[in-house]
Amino acid sequence: QVQLVESGGGLVQPGGSLRLSCVASKTRFSINAMGWYRQAPGKQRELVAAITSGGSTEYAESVKGRFTISRDNAKNTVYLQMNSVKPEDTAVYYCRCQPPLSTAYWGQGTQVTVSS
Image 1: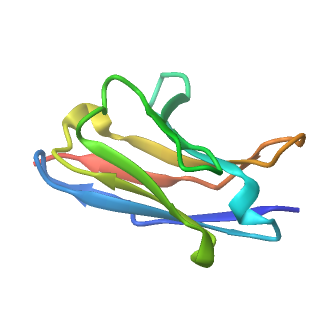
Image 2: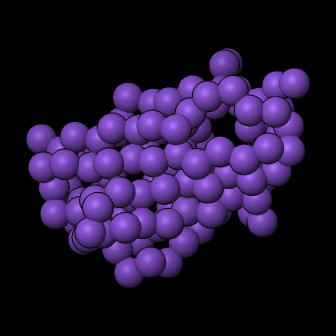
């Protein structure tokens, strides 16, 4: 069973930065597509950013130019660098692991609150 542990969430002021990390275990990390999703109160979970095993990335329009997803296969870790954050970025952020030809796995989530 794949295990995902997120960290790095917290309270940040508008315009500030935050870096989320997600460490995966019990999986061959380098072959997995990885992603970050978020869910704000009363809203559906949505894709924030994703990265393939080959390093190709995609982003939600709302975060393009502000957020960067990256991965370190040696550390079994995917990151989300969040810059110029806005109050509307407030949400629980979830890490998602998609192994080839397998079900997806989710982390437990980490809260990000953008407020002054």
